[in-house]
Image (cartoon, rainbow, N blue to C red; front, side, top):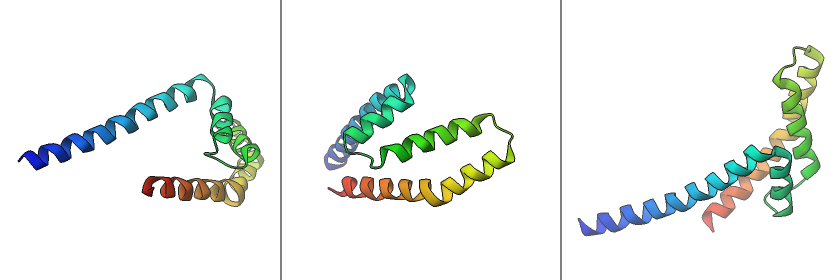
Length: 99
């Protein structure tokens, strides 16, 4: 039973660290999305900062748009630009998770 307690404590410690980091990140996101992306770019977490800002701008455009041309343009950007960007981020995060 003691070994299970140790494992549980270790898992909780890992969860607690991750949760605290996420909490800090969520605070930054709430303060200013552009600033969050800038910090992520400067820290090396993301590449192609301009493209991330374009994705944020497109998201803002589609929040309250009912214009089909805008929607089609953003959909095209998602397929051709943002999905590969997210895929690269996913790959980088996956590598970080295993280090």
